[in-house]
Structure formats: C-alpha cells, structure tokens
Image (tube, rainbow, N blue to C red; front, top):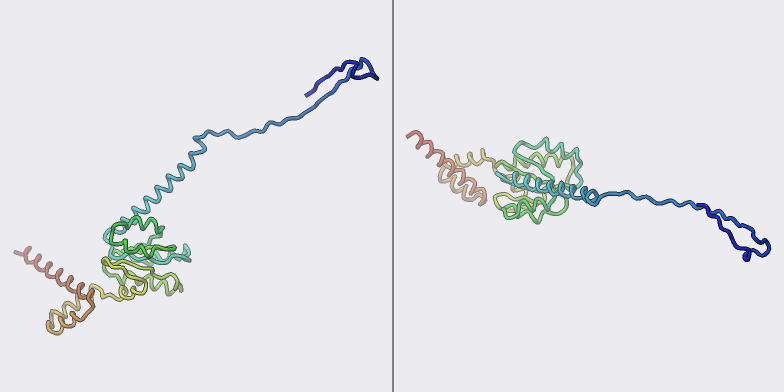
Length: 233
C-alpha cells in the first residue's frame, strides 16, 4: 500500500513549501479456514455409532442362537490367549461345541431372564464362552483340557458353567468332566435289569444326579418300546 502526504509550510519552518512524500508498504495475509457443512462434520460419528450398535445387536443375537438346544454354557478365562492359540483351539473342538469371544455385557444381555443368568458372577475380565450342544459333556470338555495342559495355560481355566439349571464353579468342573457317558448309563441300566435286587441297590447308592440320569434313560427306553408296540399293532 502506498500513500503521499503533503504538509503545509507551517509544519516545516526550515524548508517552506516543501512536499514530503511518505511511502507505506504493508503486507497482510488473510488466514484461510476450511469450510465444511455441519452435516458433513456430524456424518462420520453418526455412521460409526450406527455400525457399533449393529455389531452389538448381532453379537447378542448370535449368543441367543447358540443357546438354543445348548446343554452346557461355560466361561473360560481368555486373557493371555494369542490369536494363533485361539484358532488352533477352535480346530480341535468337535462340531457340537462352539467357542465365542464376546464382551460380558453383551453375553449378559443375551442370557437375561434365562437359566444361563446364573453365570453372571463369572462375568469379570476377558472370557471366551463354550457352547456345548451335546449330552456327552465329558467328551465335549476333554479337547480344551488337553489343549490347556499342552500349552501350559494353567491361568486360563474355566470360570464357571451352567448345566441343567445349576451353576458349577471352577472347583466343581471335575464332576462335569467325570460324568458317565450315555453308553455307560445304558450299561448300568441293563445291569440293573438283569440283576434287579443288586442293581437297584447299587443305583440307589449312586449320586442323586447320576440316579436321575439313569431313571431318565430308563423312562426313555420304556417310551421307545411302547411306541414300537403301538406301531406294530
């Protein structure tokens, strides 16, 4: 910017009628700011929140689907697991057993109001959840126990489980792992039928839950026989 100023002689007594010219130069930079519309600024957070909410809903639905026809739901301490170990463990599990890693809050929401809600005391820290869709509980738990010993994962033990509406703590999993198989129950039942007096006494002395399983198997056998007779008639 340039400007010329002319002063009257009274301001310059030593040099009358002299013209004083001043040149002023100034550089001014106007800052620029990116212009964005309010809708653009808010769009990404809204989309991310929607995706996060959708993923949570999908996880809750996945847990609920896994709970259908589930005989045992057990939690495993997941902290310290590597991705490679987790993938290897999944390959070792039979088709009737599914392993899922999910936040405790989402699993808690899925089991709300069901028998599985007894697992809430276990929902601390990082957990993986084992869904067992077979009545052969010992066979279902065996792969993880073998994997745990092989990889020396003593800290990654079961935190608890629910079977037939009852909660089992870590110290009670021994019972679940030594339950008689279906074949063993039928063998005991046949032995009881062949030797009524001795067999019945031995059965009555067995643990209450084992007795219930034997009786259930016996009732099922009678129902199958009655259905067979009805169809032949």
